[in-house]
Length: 201
Image 1 (cartoon, rainbow, N blue to C red):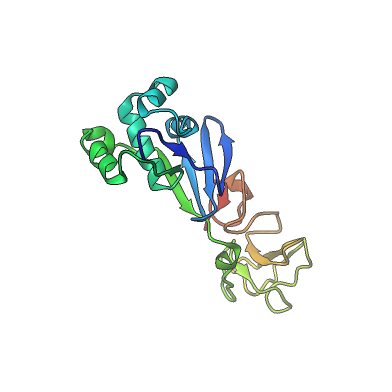
Image 2: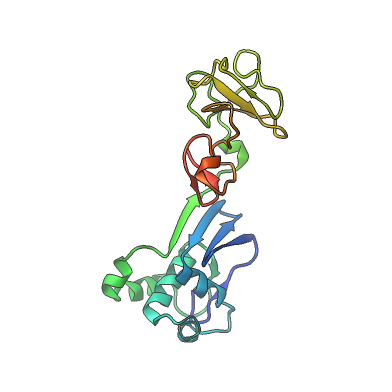
């Protein structure tokens, strides 16, 4: 990180979420939820604007901007530049006292590749678990539910994807998305809540 930070663009996919920003980094397969302050700072990182000027433009004090830049650097959303090293920036932030100990400006979650996310369960499987498709586990046809005779699922219900030919357990015969599937609300997920646009266990 330096005094003229530059935001990374290669391999970064962003989506505006109100006054916050969701940034997905393909190289680390991680999604980062940037607070309003962190998102404002990141947008101003053009490689030509100093930390002090960023603070003036976004209406934040330099302490908050320095902290945001350190967190952005830690999650690889800005490029390392000549000037302050990450270690020097960390020391500077540490000296800022209680502000450095406040809640983070960026929350991150790993998004595993599909091959890693799909680990098959075969017996007593919870809602959202990916299971083998077949007569003994899930008899659903593509895009349909089956149950309450899905032997692999503790609920007895399963769903077979319309396009990906993947079967997973559901709470009932109502549509839902499996773990690690894109979502907008928790009600869409078979198992856990929708966090950072992905269904959780």
